[in-house]
Length: 381
Image 1 (tube, rainbow, N blue to C red):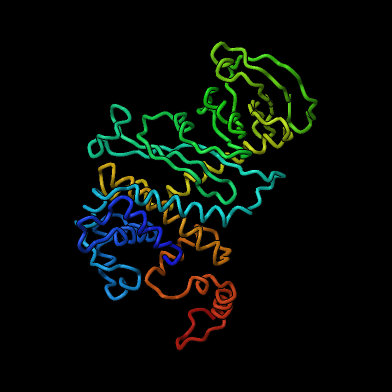
Image 2 (cartoon, rainbow, N blue to C red):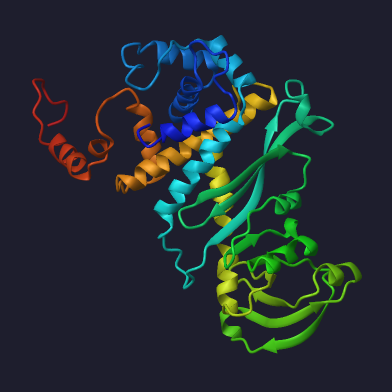
């Protein structure tokens, strides 16, 4: 928690009047409880309360300034504005992206590269009727723009599951010169034209019914899997009006699946094979969704109203970002999954993180374990 900027946190709380008429259980106490639940995989509010109350002498040093009660935490999550934690997550995103901006992607591109996608989180229809998705279920969508240099989310938005993915393009912050790798679900030429107007580049899969006319064909090496590299103009009545500029169409035969993929992009300078490699990196956002669902508490919730669910998701994002910032700042080489596991079993320990992950000490412990002598007989000679 030393990597949490408390001055920014208190500024966010003041912005939304988070501590208005609060006597004991502040927004910081609530945040610490929920991050503790994320790092130690707590199942319920009663579970959080029991675990924290079992260590009363250590709570003050962890930052708690009041006792933890299940009903107080439930009420705080239900009524305190979730935007407090969304704002602090945005600030942590800026810190994390600066730390990971030098990560190598294996491509000869210095531009920023983002992958955009959304994942659906199912909710109980009886408990969350406000998020009605279909006639028999409720759900929310987590729209994420992932910075592929470090796999840090640079933009996140939570909506009901019935909101179509393509609407996220209206809210997306566009960075000049950056590449945005997006799925076929986002194929809307009027919205894609905004990328061109903002001097940004997109790479997207084309649909089979695309209407276009070829303007020019670039030479390609078919041994690499490339079939064609064309400059085209759209000829459909609506698509041509929505996107009047020229597009680049690349057809590629995947060597492993023998499947033909067609890509559209507004970048004409990057080699065609690099465009196909860029789209391959889009799979990182799918892996990110799988990772956070397995390692963070965002599939089962401690509250049922919209505010409580969004608060839990944003505090989960904060926990992920704090772990990523601590790991990078301290130069710890362990994977983030291992980092979180080690932290979870040492959460009440005052051993420095660097000492927990000191490879030399760990190797010595393993090396000396086999030579240790014990005051008991050996079972095996």
